[in-house]
Each structure stands twice: as structure tokens, then as C-alpha cells.
Amino acid sequence: MNDAKLKIVMGPLVTGAQGPLYQQIVEAIKREVAGGRLTPGSVMPSFRALAAQLAVSLITVKRAYEELEREGIIVLHQGLGTFVAPRASDRSRSERRGVAAEALRAAVRAGRDAGLGDRELLAMLRTELASAPGAPLGKVGGHGR
Image (cartoon, rainbow, N blue to C red; front, side, top):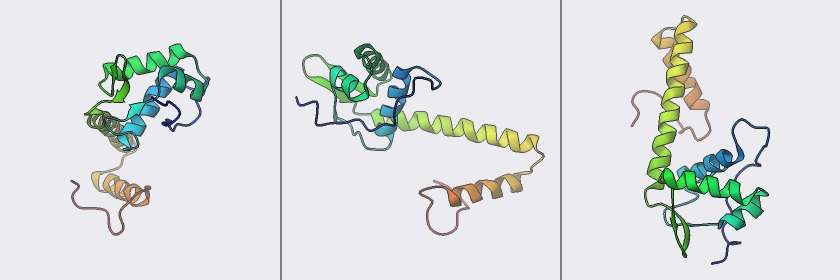
């Protein structure tokens, strides 16, 4: 297996950032999976190759991979390598939907605390949806999926 072929695209790891380095790796790989850049069955870099690419210790990558395996995002096959799990994108998207739902709940609470009514909150949401990256052309409103 040629480890140099697959590079995980992620921003720089920040030692002073909130959360440990291994968690930054976990989140970056989940983003890649959720975004479709790492697809089910994709071969992941070896521990050693990813550690070298990110300039982190082998133990940091091992811990990240162990967590991703526990969460069902990757599978480790002894002697064959590490692969993106068949249903990894479903799991990663589901987790991200949960995070988005909590953010919306927090925004509604903040709006209510500020004295905003439903119409004002919906108008603000529509404005944000229309200006967000990837917003569809035309009017945002009505019903979602």
C-alpha cells in the first residue's frame, strides 16, 4: 500500500486550541467524510504516514483512529489497512445534524431572551439562509425537505 497517495485535507493542528490534538484529527476526518471527500471504502493513511503528514506523534494518530473506529467512522483490518466504514457518512452527517439542531435551539432561546417573536426569528433565519455559502438561487422560505 502506498501511504503517500491519500492525504487528509485539514487545517493546521493548533496546540493551543480548545481540545486535544487527537480530537482535532477526529473532527477533521469526520468533516472530510461528511463532505464526501472521504468515501466509504477509501483507504486511510497508516498511523505512521498520517503522523508524519501532520507532524504529530504516532500515539496521537493512534488515539484518533481508535476513537473513529469506536464511532463507526473507520474500520481497521489487521494486515490490510484502515478504511472509511461503509456507513460512515451517515453517522457523520447524523452527528452534524444534531449539532446544527442544538445551535438552532440555542439561537431560538437567544432570540426569545431578546424579545423576538416567531416572525422576526423566521425572517432572521431566512436572511441567514439566503446569505449562507451554498444557498440556492431564488427565494428561501416555505418548507424544507
